[in-house]
Length: 258
Image (cartoon, rainbow, N blue to C red; front, side, top):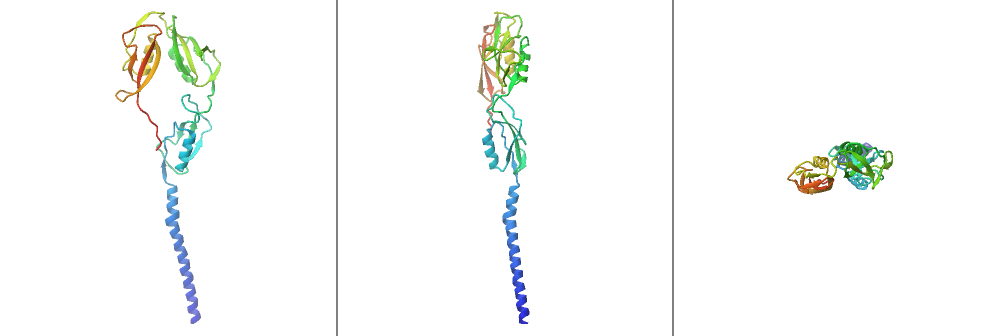
């Protein structure tokens, strides 16, 4: 009998040890592992990364448990800094799990080369569209006496005439010499206050005048892009080709990462 009691006692001790180990494992699973696993897979709001530098974005995403993936085909925007984020996928505000890859397109370090199109004898409006399609920027417009109203007579790059097919960096500024169609006639300065800046520019150019300085003013009482001031003032006698300075409303547009 004593041996039987001893055997049962040992079995009971083993069962108690096994139950204790099982309880400890369950405690670790539910109190430590499971909460950590659940937190690891929680949703994260994708921030707005456009306009930020690559290193800033990489560091920020790492801090939120997201992965940065750079698209192989970079873009190029002349106004943006090298390695600045131009596009992203998923879009800002999307909900994703941690460890999700965020794909970004970066601005190239160096501008790609493009061939200069032929703008000579092209109407000014069409010439501006062609420049935009080639990734080039319209620079100064110089009016000269000529019977062709708003017809491009010369195209210049860095002060020198540039021929069709010549390779220049994308985003380069091209100045245009344009016919006034009127010679040196006297004309009345039109009233462009309250007009959209694009419409105002075409009216100025169409009147035989040239665009001067465009000043942007932060104001919230009129829509963005509205002309709020002009010099010379409306009604003044002007000569063909004279410059007109304008002041345009600009709303504050700040980019932040939450």
